[in-house]
Length: 254
Image (cartoon, rainbow, N blue to C red):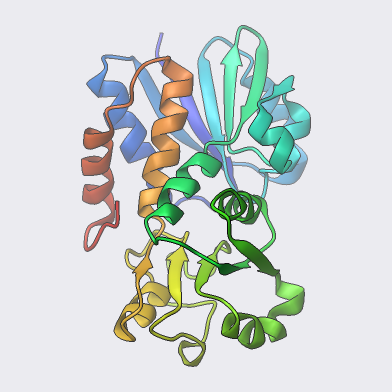
């Protein structure tokens, strides 16, 4: 029987996760397939309930369901209790446990920028919660700018030495959440959007001489951790990186 894992979200046709996970399943000889599940909010409970079936090994969860899915699992890992958001479901028998692999993946990505004193995080969803926690773990103070307070972005960025875009702005487009005039060469940038790679925000920051990275590295690391939860084995991360690079093309920060 072919088993399944999948991504639960909305408007997720852009996702590169199937390429990574299908390559990983094949590499370890697991008869499994990764599918995209575009799920409206009123159908989320039914979809999660279906994942208790033995044909499922688990799922990833993305916007806008990272918070709501926590209440549909039978138990939650400590990082989910801390954040109130999950991006991974693990099936064990008929029980589902909610996990968050975004947090450790983000800690790794953010550590690559060196010491951060004060960061601005754009957005207030599940990815933002993980970014805030990862930055706190690394000793940085954090200021969150949500859509309702967008007009305060310029003043906030003047105080920051790192910007994290945890909104979907820029996904499959040439849009940026930040006007180029607000960027500078000493403001480092992590854009969690990974398609296109690099995003306009990353290109604009690099054009000014700033250190900037897209979201592909974070995507790869959280995917590898999810794979290890589902299978109990080590993720073939080199093969996953190669599959991601083939899927995204151009430039891959991973």
